[in-house]
Length: 150
Length: 126
Length: 360
Image (cartoon, rainbow over all chains, first blue to last red):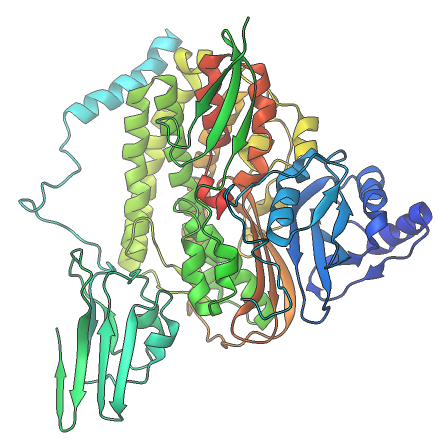
C-alpha cells in the first residue's frame, strides 16, 4: 500500500477547500493535520477520492491543558501509515458535522465521543447511548468542567 | 471415496479420544501439576525487606499496604482478595524480598500481615 | 406476514458476553436488528488516567481475556516510543510469540463456538481440546493460562529457558498435527458448508464503508493485515502470509480463521528458530516525557488502535483504545437484514464478538 505523500495531500486540500491546514508535528511517526471544523467533510472527500484512504480507525475526543476551553477531536485514518485529522471545537458549544453519510463506520465512534464529552454531531439522528446506561444523568463523564474534575 | 477419506479424519480423532486418558485431574485426589512460573500466594523474604514501599506504590489494585512507625518498625499487609496476582510487586522490588510462591490461594477477604519488623527483632510470616 | 421483534440478550445462551439485540423477523426471514451494548462498560479509559503507567499495564491486560497480550503489547509499544527506549530483540520475539499463540488459541476457541452453534458438537470439543495445548504453552512460559502478565514497559517479565524452548517447540509440533486434522474436517464437512456457505455475504465496498477490520474484512477480499502492512519489530523481519477469500460469506470467515491458525503456528516456529539471545528487558523511567503517539496492532479480531498522550508525569493524560470488535459490530445490523432466523447464530459467531473489548 503506498503511503500518502504529505505535501501532495496538503496541496490537494488547498485546491479543494482553499485553506492550508497546519501540519501538527507532535504525534510521533504520524502525519497529523489540524483542519478547521467546517472543512472536515471536504478533507475526508480528498482523502478518499484522491488518495484511496478510506479506513477510519477511530475518533479520539480529548481536552488539553494547553488549549483551555476547547475540545479536540482526532480522526485517525490509516493508509499504509497513520494520517490524523485534528479539529478543535469550543467547549461551551461543541458541534461538528457528522460523517456517517460518507463513512457509515464512524457511527459508533461518534456516539462514544458524543456521550463521553457532550459533543453534538449535526446532520444525523440523535445519537443514542452506546456505552453509558440509559439512566446515567450525571453528564458527560470525561468532560472537565470549571471546578477541578478527575 | 475422497469424501470418505476426509471424513475419516474426524473418525480418527474420535477413536483416539476414546482410547486416551482424560486431561483433567480429580483434584484433590489426583496430583496437581502447577507450572514453575505459577503465581500463587504472596510471600516475603524477611531478611531482605526494608519497608521501602516500592511494591506498595506499583501495585495496580492497592493490595499492599505499609504501616510504618519508624525505620525499623513497620508492617506490610497484603489483601489477598484485592490481589490480581500480576507479580508487579515482584518486578518492582529491587531487593528480591517479595514474590509469589506455588501455594494455591483460597478465597478470603481477610488481610494477611506479611512482615512485622520490630526493634531488635525480625519476624516474618511464611 | 406480521413482523415480530425478538430480543436476544443481554443474557442469552448464544452469547458469551452480554449484548442486547432486538431482531425483527417476519416468518423465517430476518428483516433487521438493532443492538445496544455497554453492559460490560467499566470505564477503563478514564481509569488509566488515574493510575501510573506501570499500574496501567495490568489494568489494560484486563480489558479482554482472549486478546489480553496484544492490548498490553500495543500499550507498551506506545509508551516505549514516547520514552525513546529500544526493547531488546529477544523481548520483541517473545512478545510476538505470545501474540501468535494468542491468535491460535482465540481462533480455535472461535472455531469451537461456531461448530457448536452449527450443531457439530464434536468439532467443538476437539478444537477446545487442541486449544488446551496452546494454553499449556502459554502457562508453561508465563505462569498463567489466561492472565499472562507477560509485558512490562521496557520488555517482557520472563525469559525462556532452553528447556522451555524445547517444550514450546514440541507442543507446537503436536498442535500443528492436531490442527491439520481439524482443518480437514472444517474444509470438507458437508454440514458445516451447508450452514455457512452463502450466508450473509458482505461485499468489499461495504467493508470499506463500514471500516471493518480483521478476518471479516479479509474474508471479503480486502487485503489488509497490519502484521505485514504496518509491522512492529519483529514482524518486519517475518514473511507473514496474508490469507484472503473472495466470497465474503460465513463460510469464507470460517475458512480464513482456520487457515490463519495454521499460518500462526508456522510463524511461531519461525520465531522460535530465529529468536536471538540477549536480555529481555531494559530499565524504563517512570516519568514519560510529553508527547503523543498512535500505535496499531493486529489482534486476533483485527486492528487495535491506541492513542496515548503524555503530559510529562507518571500518569497518562489521555489513553484512547479502539478495539476491533467495535469496528466489526457496526456491520451487524446490515448483515442481519439478509438472512433466515436459523442463520442468526452463524452470523453472530462469524463476527467473533468480544464484547468486553468493545465496551471497555
